Image 1 (cartoon, rainbow, N blue to C red):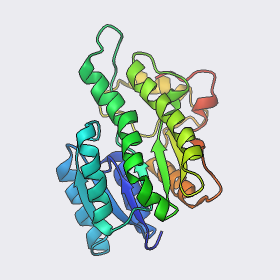
Image 2: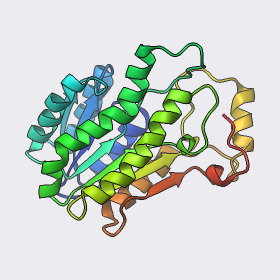
Image 3: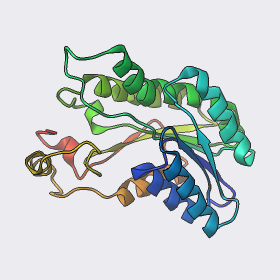
Length: 247
């Protein structure tokens, strides 16, 4: 990863932030992105720059807003003068039971999980092609096995899977495009009962929650795997092949 630049959307917190730290440790410069979590993003950049001066830059913007994407994409390119890896990680996640779905929900869930990755990939495509770069999309095992009361989220992630495979064909051979489908890695920021958590764990063959390191390892592999494209790598302890995927 030395002399490489990785742009990670939604990287102020959680999996995105850990992945930024992990890839930075491997030698990559990092473009950190946030929408609302400015303080966390600034702290992350400060930490990375203390480890290696001038190795992290910050861009901010709502990627569900089409009018913002070109600005964010250009700022990311300008941060170090190149992008080698684009990780579309930014995502909204919350339930939308039928009968309650609004246009705002559509804007947030479809905008962040499908529309944003598509248009940002399109904008960054010329830069990535120059560097024989790669795109990694964060999808979800529920793109294939929908989660009850999360119709919009699952629709958007399913579309992201199709986009990953389609762009892998269209952008080859100069850009590889793959996806990572996490299972239960971190509990949602919304409160969950112990009963609901135990119900999820019961249907994971590994019988445990995954760790953020598991996702970072998978991403690192896909960055270095020069003959892998158009693939969705499930990192879920076997949950996606279990007979049930509740929760």
